[in-house]
Amino acid sequence: MEYTIETASLDTLHSDCLIVGVYLNKELSTAAQTIDQNTQGLISQLLNRGDISGKVGDTLLINVVPDSQLERILLVGLGENKPLTSKIYRKTLSAAINVFKKTTIKTVVCTLADAEVIASDRQWKTRQIIEIFNDALYKFNAYLANKEVDFALEKISITAPEAELSLANTGITQGKAIAEGINLTKLLSDLPGNVCTPTYLAEQALALGEKYPSLAIHILEEVDMAELGMGALLSVSRGSRQPAKLISLNYQGGDANAKPIVLIGKGLTFDAGGISLKPGLGMDEMKYDMCGGATVLGSLLAAAEMKLPLNIVGLIPSSENMPDGDANKPGDILISMSGKTIEVLNTDAEGRLLLCDTLTYAERFNPDVVIDMATLTGACLVALGRVPSGLLGNNDDLCNALIAASETANDSLWRLPLWEEYQEQLKSNFADLANIGGKDAGTITAACFLSQFAESFNWAHLDIAGTAWRTGQNKGATGRPVPLITQYLLNRAYG
Image (tube, rainbow, N blue to C red; front, side, top):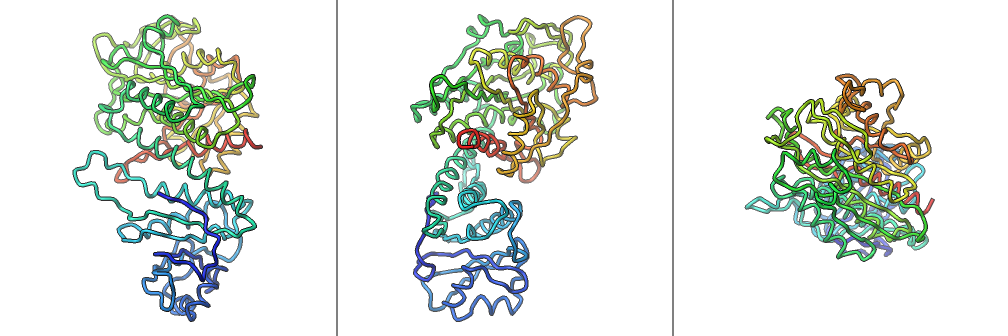
C-alpha cells in the first residue's frame, strides 16, 4: 500500500473517494463544509434527509458526486462536535476503512487527521490512520487456492496543511514502519507450525539482517546452548524433532557505549503441552505460542526502518514442546544456566523454561532494561480477558514507562502485583524452585518464577496470552504488542 501526504486544496483533488467527517446535530467538519459548498449542498441535503446521523462510526458512501472531480465521498460519523478521545478516533478510522471492502475503489484521500483528538498532534493522528487502515488490509491467504483480496485499494493520501507538513511526514514514516512490523508479526504468527519452525524463525531473522545493515544476527544452535549450560531451555526441545534455536538480533543505532534495551520474546512455534498433553480442542491455536518472538522481530524491523538512535538487542528462544520418549517428565529436575535447579511439575509450563535461561543469557549484554513478552499463561486471559496485556516487573520506572507507552499506542496494559508472598507457591522439596505454583494466581506465579532469573537488571514481563491473537470466527494474529513496544522505543529515543 502506498501512503502519501496531500496538501492540495480539497476543491482541486482527483480521487476515487474522499473521506470526510460529520458530527451529530447535522454539523459538518471543516473538510465536509468545503465539499458541501463545492457540491451545491449535497452533504447537507443527505444529513437533513437523515441518511446519516453522525454517531461515532456511522458511515455513508456517496457514489455519485455531481460537478466534482471526486468520484465518491465517504461520510464518517465523529459523534459530538468536540475533541475526540483516542479510542473514538481509532473507532472512526476502523469504520471508515471497512467501507472499502469488496469495492473497486483504488485511491482514497482521508481528511480525518483534521479532527481534533485530545492530547494528540498531527503526527500521532496520521500514524494511527496508517496503523488502523493497514491492519484492516492485512489478510492471511498464503494457503488458499482462491486468493481473492478484500480490498482493491492501492494508494491512501492523508491531508495536512502546509504548516503541519513536517509532523504529518513524521507520522507517515512512523506509521509505515510500525505497520510493516505488525504485518511481519502477524504473518509469522499466522503461519502453520509445520512451516514456521524454530529454523524458519531463525531464517527470517537472518533475512532481516540482510535487509538492514544496522541489524547483526547471531543464531545459537543446541550445541552452543549446551556449552552455556542452558539446561532449562534445551529440556523443552528434547521431545521435538525440530532443533531449538536462540536467535539474537543486535541493533546498533545509538552511541557505542550506551547500554542496550533487551527485548526477549518467547518463540515456541508449537505447544502440544509435552507429556502434560493439552486437550485437543483448540490445540491448533498453539501455533500462536511464538507471538512473543514474532513481536521481537516486528519491533526490531520497525526500529531499523525508523533508524532509531538506540541500541536494542532482541533475543528469541525458539523450540517446540512435543510429547516423546525423551521429553520432559513431571518430576524431572533441570539445571538452568544460572545454576538454579527447577523441578518440572507440569511440562506444559515450558515457556518459563525457555525464558529463564534467556534472561540469564541477557546479562552478558549489560542491559539498561530487559522486557520479555510471552503468551505465557491462560490465567492471564481469565483474569484480564482480551483487552489489556498483563504487566509485571521489578522496577516501577520501567513499568510506568510501559504503561505510558501503552496509553499513547492504544495497546493496553494492566499491572499485576509481584509480591514476595507469591514466591512461596514456587517452593519445591527437591529443587530450588518448581516450574508452577498451583492453581491460584497463575499469571503472577509465572512472573515470580521469571523474576528469580532477572535479579541483576531492571525487568518487565508482558503476558500477551489474551491479546496476541483472536479466536473464533475472526481467528488470527493481532500484531500486539508491537505498537506498545515501538511506542516505548520512540519515547526512549525522543522523550
